[in-house]
Image (cartoon, rainbow, N blue to C red):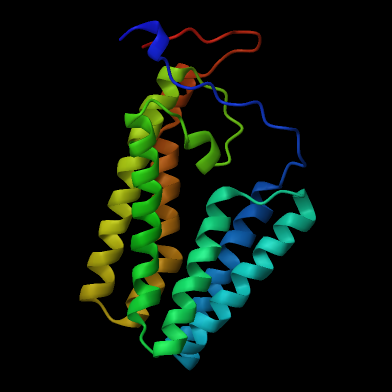
Length: 205
């Protein structure tokens, strides 16, 4: 393709407080673990209410510590509150079970749709501090876009074929390890297209 169609440059982000990776994992997993434990003892309705409170507390803690709200946890929290409210109002767990499917489809569609129009949303979606060449971002975006659809499909399979307890277990301790393994598998691509200090990217399209 011609140079004038190169991907939209990624805007420079203002410096913000770095968040400890372990603390970030605790903030993301905390509400899910509480959801799982509450579901086993009190059922999915009470667990849904606990999850709703948990994601709000997690976001507040993240803001207090970094003065920044990551995109993915923020979108996920909004979805939890919306589908959680529907679950409690109608007393129907289908809504909270479908939440991961819908959120992942939204992320996947946004990434691949923007990529189709030559836009790079992945640095925003992943709240990433990576510095990659445009070609690397495009390839990584395509992979993550497909991966979100895979997560959506897995969630649909599990909640439609398994018990609520099994689904809750998968939601808490299944999705995260799968995502971590996938992210680690992208390291060779990231290393290949990483911009070195002082290196400027060149248009690829």
